[in-house]
Length: 181
Image (cartoon, rainbow, N blue to C red; front, side, top):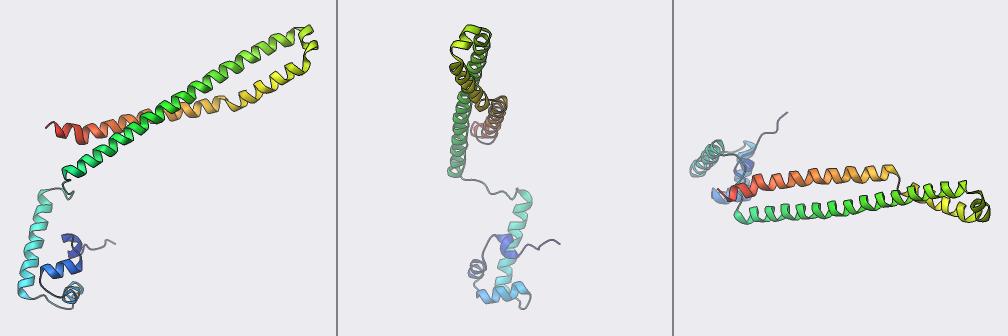
């Protein structure tokens, strides 16, 4: 069931404001809205004139109010700040991806070396604790920087790039193209 739009909502006024404009008591307006009383003739004529103007203007224009240049500038500044924050997050994510890749390369090299050292029987017998310690550190680091973590940051980077495109597109469409017209 649709809620009916009240006269106050249609005009964008409170009961007090509309009663002051029509030069009637707020209680008179309230009773008029509930259907228990009629308005004085002069108030009714004024109300009809206001309603006619608002309804006709709403038919001609969209109901979206025109933004002042100050509001547009504020929205533009917010969009630019969002773009700047997005770029920072992209740089941060790129650094994390690079760190993960370096760590994974380090771990791969360490496992390769451990494989070599384990095949050398004399080194394996001389330093068994060192080899076990190196292997434990490599496994720990491999677990810390696994493929799923890399995938997570790569997805985040892709999403940030898409967000940047959309923010820039929104800024261009709404504010930069309009200012050059």
